[in-house]
Amino acid sequence: MTVNSGDTAWVIMSGALVLLMTPGLALFYGGMVRAKSVINMMLMSLISITVVSVLWALFGYSLAFGHGSQWLGPLHLGGLGDLVRTLTDNGGTQPVPALAFAMFQLTFAIVTVALVSGAIADRARFAAWTVFAALWCTIVYLPVAHWVFDLGQVTAGRVTGEGVLAAHGLLDFAGGTAVEVNAGIAGLALAIVLGPRVGFRREPMRPHSIPLVVIGVGLLWFGWFGFNAGSALGANGLAAVVLLNTQLAGAAGIGGWLLVERWRDGRPTGLGAASGAVAGLVAITPACGYITPTASLAVGAVAGVLSAFAIGLKYRFAVDDSLDLVGVHFVGGVWGTLAIGLFATRVVNPAGGDGLFHGGGTGLLGHQAVGVLAVLAYSFVATTLIARLIDRTIGFRIPRDAEVEGVDFTEHAETAYELDTRTGSGSFLAGHHTPGGRA
Image (cartoon, rainbow, N blue to C red; front, side):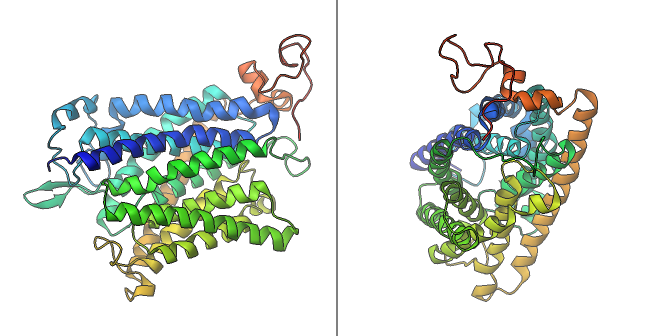
């Protein structure tokens, strides 16, 4: 298919927007942890950019989007170099250069890996996290991305080589399963393997900077327009619908979360508003290209309500999902993926289907449920095995004393804030070895 310059420009810009989400996530996560863990939290996001980019160039794109079996693409080392010859005719189903598509999808892989770190804040060795990021991207993300995102190639007028879940009817416009459910359930597995933080359920572990959280969610929201609308792979009417759906769901997510806080706690919070926005944006991610703007309001509002209640479950089950990755991303991703089976309509996207509320019956809902269960099961089991392997070899969790002292100092010899103006260095670096930054 011959490429279109307008569509190409939109996909390139969308890739830049999605890449911005990872620094935005670093700020969002960095504000949510205690002051003694800010640098470590941010670095776990930033190192994901390095690790995933290198793997993507070496073999990642080939495994995720190479047209081999329905389960995984062929291992083609350095396969991105071959795409230079497809700048005018990509041989695929979309009017953009294959390299532009490869860059766009790389940014998805980066932010998905970075998301997982939110479940293990305050207690992970940085080297172990780096190894985990490489293994998890290779063993978990790349296969799942192939199952969900690889929509095949045109061969003799037919589309062939689709990923297994896409071929069997799963609709996921921008990553409810491959990104949100995948990262969310992986976070749960990691939190179980590493165990809770010292003082979990006994000491307050409040966010140290709500302004950082709000700035971070603003960048995430901005980048999400590229994440979702860019997945239309063209500057067209569908991208316009997706853009509006994304905005409305994020806004409705704030409303849903704050209503729960007002009813349950008596007052709305800044952290709640930021979390509600993310919940709404997560939920609309898979559904944004298949439902109407009115339905997107319902999807976002329900996501805000569900996630606001879900985050409390970690205390009931004593699973320390530090930054509520499971309660927001997993729950929101599951709801958004299943919502397609309820709200989807061919009026928005003829390539999709009609959900239950538009006369389509329960068939599509069944396909969505199977997709969620498949990704959930594979990601949870594979992540658990990877985490236990790392823990038993190089050790995943920092020692107890180092955790109490602060992972920033013990892992990076840095602190996020200048606390001792007399020495010109942070109090930790000046030899003050007492716990700092505890909210």
